[in-house]
Length: 225
Image (cartoon, rainbow, N blue to C red):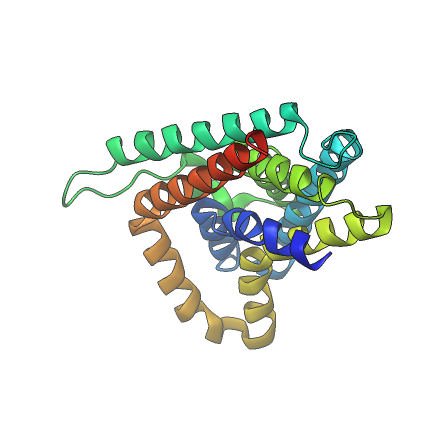
């Protein structure tokens, strides 16, 4: 189980480094209904990521390795495709970076986030975690790594639970900080929000490139065994 956790660790960190969702929860924690909407958003994020992880693992478990225990060709090819896509996304992010002195554009729905209730916040959290293309790719990669590790069903579930927990750390962190410190946490959270907004493109470019190259490397290793 330990080696499997090591394999999924960078992928879980990739899920956790999600500037737009982090900015979203920080904005929610600055509204009058911060405790309600922030908690609902975090719950939705964890639930969305957990559901997708469970579904993907259920589909891939048992078929990601061949009879000799080596990675199945289709699993390695899928990793290669996801890795190549991430590298292309890194190039796209870099090409679309803001010009010097220009602010990075953020989603327009963020301007109305102070009107969100618990239900809308819950749905947004689930949408940004479970149906985010980046997270879907990383979850597929993590589930493939777990399915190929030769673990028992309980160990597979435990390893993916670690993936979900690590992938949710940057969303749960601001909420815990706010619940512990209240309005005193807002200055720190505002600084985080500003930094994420300014460096969003650079963060995503490096993230896609590093994770893409890792998946491509893993795929090549599996194909050449």
